[in-house]
Amino acid sequence: MIEITSVKNSKVQFVKKLQDKSFRKREGLLVVEGENIVKDLPSSVEAENIFVVKDKVGEFDYILKRYAQDKIIAVDDKVMKSLSETVTPSGILAVVKANAQKKDIVGNVVILDGISDPGNFGTIIRTCVACDIKDIIAINCVDYTSGKVVRASMGGIFRVNITECDRNEALTMLSNHKLYALDMGGESIYELSKPIEPFALAVGSESKGLSAELRNNSQIVALPMKGDIESLNAGVSLSIALYRFVFEK
Image (tube, rainbow, N blue to C red; front, side):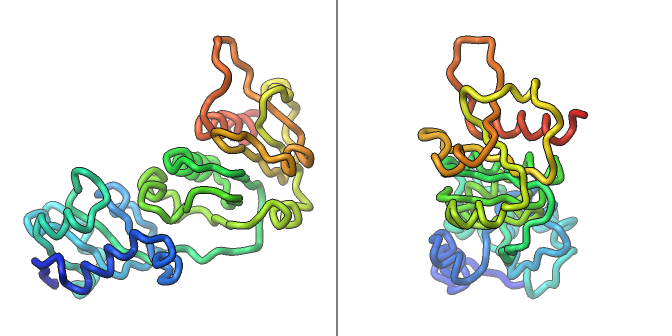
């Protein structure tokens, strides 16, 4: 086990650089922070390093024993605080290889059209995993490799394939899918007959809604509302609709 006590150490500086999107993309690495996410990393995910506060090595031993000693780096509180993007670091952080993007779309798909909120993106990833959706297409969305999205996904990001592309590419890739899109004024999802599979279910931007390209190429569906509220946020809307699509017979 390596020990580091200086924030100027090259390994520490490297991790801090991963807060930059372009550097993450170039290196093909993600920073995963928090006990629950690190402990649930799939065995297929390759870890470059595990940083742990020295005083918590014993507490996190059940996680650390999965990794070779030369990958584990013990640090003090000052170094961990410099590495962490959270206000109160949990004491463990991993640098891991990101999933390679795949262009072969198999089965049902979720399309995110301009999702800018990291929390919504992460929530949708978790819902997709719960519904056994293997592929997400992201069009003009927040960077899904950011720490906020990774944390909000609770590790789900390693269990789906996320493909970034433009709208025309998405429509071409999904030429064999039935497209549905959530938007106001559409048919209630509870009146809809069983979705045609394979389906692609799209949700639009929190502020702008669906793009014209997706709206014009999809069957529009909506969530019924009784109360005096205009809409739900994208993460909630997509989750409700996807559960209806996947689990109701």
